[in-house]
Length: 396
Ligand SMILES: Nc1nc2c(ncn2[C@@H]2O[C@H](COP(=O)(O)OP(=O)(O)O)[C@@H](O)[C@H]2O)c(=O)[nH]1
Ligand SMILES: [Mg+2]
Image (cartoon, rainbow, N blue to C red; front, side):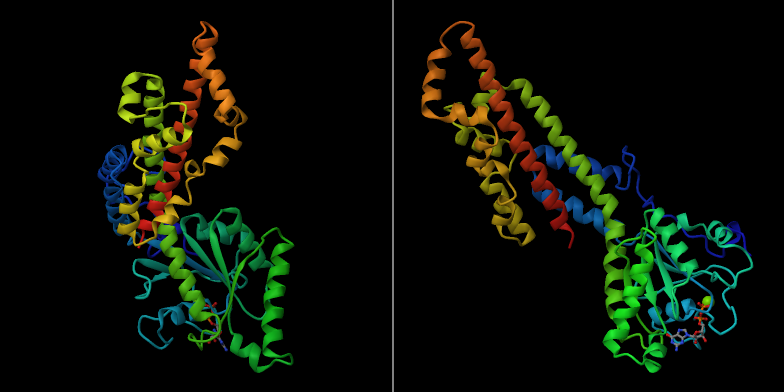
């Protein structure tokens, strides 16, 4: 058995290291992108945020992805790879197939449908001379990003163990039941019933081992346009895309949240100061509606700003507004009894009298600051939600 170090093409773990890395653990965006998005969020320049996200996604969209195709020998792994690549087994660059064990070492294949994706044809289990534990160790599963477990005829205990191992690694995998043409040609049941039975059997077997909701496709490599093959291709496209974008997007999102948190800290220190009140243009600090409006302007999540974002992303502005808690005043007030109590007229009147009495007045000012800080935090959370949505919607 070939040792991992001698693999013809050792899979490259996805890392997006082409750019300089940012200082967070899950660093996957360039320092330049990180700085640009930080600046853009600081200025509330959402159009620039969109531009940074798009540029980042363009860079990572061609990051290498390694997909391992595994299963028991003879299940049809090599044939499946050829079918996915849209080539016949007789073509020069095809994966060798046959009734005798033909795949001896992990071999990688490219596929024009999935640029920069390496499809790894792994030797099969079962006929291998070593135990499954050795197989798992030698195949270095942790290096692959996604797995396709090929099954046919029966869902063996080896396949269950493979699924459990991959599940344990927290990686995504599909179960592809192949040679469906053979099952259908020898069936006694209706086609619908047969397909249902195959699915149920795989699901039940895996659920018994704690692997829930497996993604199952039923295909024939001899008919790559039929059954679940088209859906499998679409799903793979989506998953490869998600896989490439997930970490960079998370990273950008973390940077955005940090900038908003920093703003909150700065402004909280200024609450109650005349300068902030003047900057915000708040006439009546008792009026929650006015305060929330002012904070929305401060965080650039006011109607005008959202309109610009929505237009740029081709979405209705309402989609963004609907995610904002600060625009739903009754809920803001009812969620906090202290706020709702102070908002009623009697309380407001009482407050204006009490604030003129020493000591009691001090408490009232303290309350007013607490309330402003509360509103500030609500709008800050709204801004984070909006930013997360902007990031998601910026991916074309
Ligand atoms: N009928 C049928 N036979 C298949 C299919 N896929 C593979 N085979 C046959 O199964 C045998 C083993 O296939 P191969 O791809 O080499 O299996 P591997 O050892 O898992 O790589 C070959 O004779 C293939 O022609 C399929 O979808 N339908
Ligand atoms: Mg093979």
